[in-house]
Image (cartoon, rainbow, N blue to C red; front, side, top):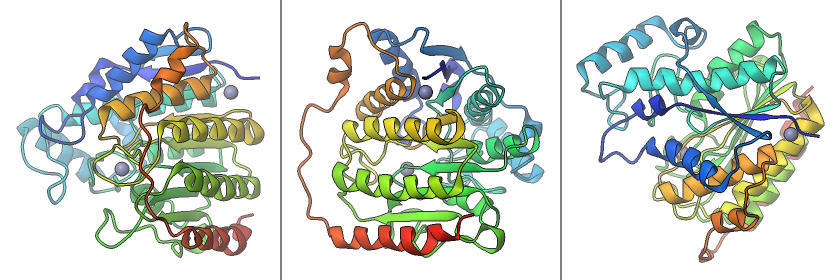
Length: 359
Ligand SMILES: [Zn+2]
Ligand SMILES: [Zn+2]
């Protein structure tokens, strides 16, 4: 039985903006909300909730004061870059980053207090952000800030962070690399592909040894193989870890229509992953699941995927049963040749060698 799901949104999220020509366009958050309104998904199962900016103090649990001040000051000037050229600064960026982080924090707190069962933030999922550095369009790591809040204020100590963005969740992994926070990232991996980390042999250090799982994937991976790998690794790892709270990054840049990653997922895969994540949250932690956005550079595909994700997690049913069908891809993705054995090798390494380290 599923309780209410909160969909956190504010028009202020649009301030998380890098400029007109930048691939990262926050307008997709508004379009997801509008799509859910259009199909009549909001109601008792899926509640539209107004989000608000995070308090700067909370960021300090993850980010250095110097870095936070740097983002604020550069934002006042409205120019420059936060990294080596991917993440430019606009005058609204600091406020926008507080907004997208705030939506994740509000969702996490509402779920932690039992006000709602699941929460969705179409923004957030800023997994490349490091304690004192921005990277790959990510300014503040909302997943990490949320984890620290759950640990310190609410006493959760079995937190799992699952990341299905096309890119490795490097910032999140690094922050918790020596701790018993479970991180699982499925991502494209290969020479020159950003951020060039996340090989299967990177599994954590000290107390974190075995608690950091990476599923590196070649270009073109289709639904069937991806879903199989997710099912094997995520299900096994959560069975071993027994999380008391699940954070799930749902970047949609692994969609076949996305220009940055060249993976091969369809909207059906996103819907199915959302169903699996939802089932796992009910199996392990009374449904405590917070889902964030992430990458997504094909706006149409990202908006349709996210509307499907919101319906799958919440069980919301649109006015028109056909509406969900219309959100699916209308064309079929041309198949690429994939070395399936290589992916099977990664999965058996993780299941047989790494997951048994989890206690
Ligand atoms: Zn549920
Ligand atoms: Zn990405």
